[in-house]
Structure formats: structure tokens, C-alpha cells
Length: 255
Image (tube, rainbow, N blue to C red; front, side, top):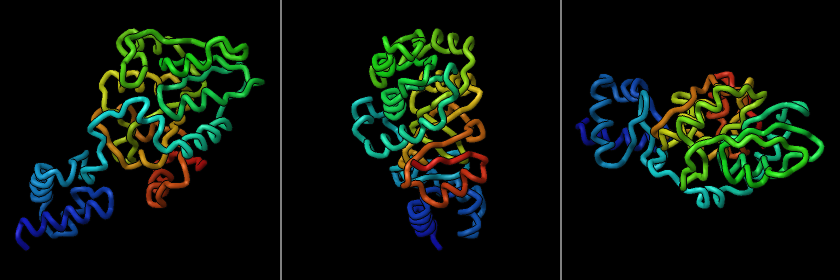
């Protein structure tokens, strides 16, 4: 098989499987891992695949442009509403502290917090703070920082430093991408730093992500898959992804 034929076949395998590792491709095409890496580099230059840690994904699977808040808020709205409703069962007892990360699904969770469930809510998200400010059953803690125009979330050294002094019962995280091999990712470095601090602050980490995020990898990793206790997602999750998450020790709640 000529190199061009092999590369074309590799691209088809990666597109069909949504992700393939270097080792798997080497075995399938009976070549060395070094040859696979050269082939993947060639395919990436052609725009057919994206190199990720240990392998490759289809070019369309890797988030290279960060969507804005409005764009994210109108995508997969039914699934996000269902995920937020399912996440209510994961709230800690009244009187506890939770952190709500910035995200289009976490803002939906904020909107449906029960009125008879008193909580301290820590957030760096302006839309979440706007929904919760003044509610008698919520003690709101708004984190400091520079507000990004893209996500309307506070970021920066002040935000991360403030989180270091907080211990929450549950951290509810949003993510741009989630994979069992590379973990949780987002396109922005400062946003990743805040999300990393949020994940470290909670006694329990719950990720709210619709199934379109699973298998996607952005450029900035902020948590390993082992840092996640629970993933709340929708019924669109693929069986193989569910099995991989189960094997990784992540509890999966399907809304």
C-alpha cells in the first residue's frame, strides 16, 4: 500500500470511529508508530484530522474556535434543560456550599434551584450571579476578576486566588470538551485556570455536558477524567463512550 493510500484509509478509520490511537492505527495498517505519526501529521496539514494526545480525531471534532455565550445558549437547548433538571438530584443538603461554573447548562441549573433549599452559591459567571442576586434562599458569593466578553465569566489571578480560600461541597463544572483519554478541555488558558481551581475546590465534582461535547478536545486541559465524580449528560451519549466512562470510574447520569 502506498503512503497516500494508507493515509486516505487512516482518515476514513478516524472519521468512522471518531477517534483512533497511534497504537491502534499501527496495528491495523501493520506499520510502526513512527510511520503513523508521520501519516497523521500529513493528514493534519491537509485539514482532514486533528492530532490529539496519543492519536487523532476528525478535524470537525476538535473545537478550535470558542463559541460565544449566545451561540452556546441556543445550541442543544432541550438536552441542556434536561441535564439541568437531572442535576438537581445531586445538590448537597440545605446549608451547603456549591460552585457554579460559567456555562450555558450551569446557568439553567441556577434558574431552577429549589426555593426551599438554602445554599451558598459561589460563581464567577455574571449571568448566574444576575439570576441569583437578591434571592432570599441563596447566599451569593461573586468571585472577582476580569470579565471575558466571550463567556461573561470572571477570569485571572484574582479569581483563582479567591477560589483557593473556598471549600465547596459540590462543584458543578461546564466544559467545551470531554474525553476519557485527555480529560476536560476548553479553548482559553485563563478560563482553564479558573475551571482547574473550581475542580480542586469541591469535595465532589459534577460535570454538566451534553453528549455533543463527549469525544471533543480543545487546546487547554483543566482536569483529568479521574477528577470527575459524576457526568450528567443526555441520551445521545454513545454506548462506547458510556462504557469508557464507566471503566474510568465516572458515574454517568443520563437525563
